[in-house]
Image (cartoon, rainbow, N blue to C red; front, top):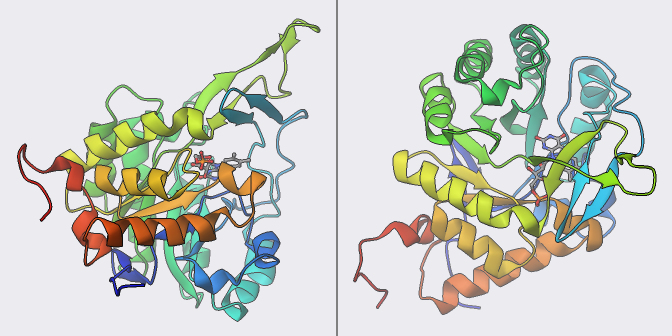
Length: 315
Ligand SMILES: Cc1cc2nc3c(=O)[nH]c(=O)nc-3n(C[C@H](O)[C@H](O)[C@H](O)COP(=O)(O)O)c2cc1C
C-alpha cells in the first residue's frame, strides 16, 4: 500500500488513524478486543459515564427500524469510580488510545466528573455527551439549550484547565446546530462530535402502546447518515478550524470517506459494530485505500474537501 499520512488530531491529542468507536456501542472495548487489537484503531470512545451507578431505563430498550435501530438504554452504567478502577487500566494495558465520554444531569455533575478525570494517565481526550436531560431545567436536554450547553462546557473547561482536549457531543434535534456548536466552542471545546442519535418512537400495533419501555428512543444506523453528513457539512462550513468526529450510520469505507469530505477529521462507528464486530477495522482499511485511490497524500487534505469551490478538481 502507498504511504499516506492517516493520522488525525483533536486539540493537542494525536491519533494514528481517524477511526473510533462511537460512545455506548463498544462499552470499554473488551468485547471488541476479542476480534482485533484495540491499539490498531484510532481510539476507543468509552460509553458515557455518570457520577453514580445507574440502572438505565425500563425494558424493552431496543427496536429494529428500517435501516437502523432505536435504543432507550438510558445511560446504564456503574459510575465513574468503578469505571476508573476497572476500565482505564485495562485500556491502557491494551495500548488503546482512550477518549472518555462523560454525561451528567446537572452542570455541576459534569464538572465533578471532569475533576475525577484530571491527572488520570492514559486518557487522550474527554467527550462531553450533552444529550442528557437537565434535571435543573424541566428535563430539557442540555444539547437543545444553547445556554445550558455552554455552561456545561465552560464548567468542564475550567475544571480541566488545558490538560485534556474537550470534544462536545451535540444532538441533531435542534433548529440551529451551528449556533449551538459556536457556543460550545466559545466556551472552550476543542472539537465536536456530531451526531448523537435522533429522537424517535415505535408503536407496537398489536399492543397498541409504545414499544420501548422508555417510550421514546434514539435512532441510529444508516437511516440517520444523511442527517449526520448535513450536520458535519454545515458545522464545518461555519467553523472550519474545529475538528469534528463525524458519526451516524457509517457502515463502510465509502460512508466514512463521505463524512471526511463533509468536514470530519475522524469518524466514530457505532451501530455497524453490532452486526459486524470487525466493522471498524474494515472501514479503516477501506477508507485508507479510497484516500490513496483519490490521490490524497494525507487524511487532513481530504477533510472538508466537498467544500472546495466549483471547478476545482484533484489532479
Ligand atoms: C445502544 C446505543 C448506546 C449509545 N450510548 C451512547 C452513550 O452512552 N453516549 C453517547 O454519547 N452516545 C451514545 N450512543 C450514540 C452513538 O455514540 C452514536 O452517536 C449514534 O449511535 C450514531 O452512530 P451510529 O449510527 O454509527 O450508531 C449510543 C448509541 C447506541 C445505538
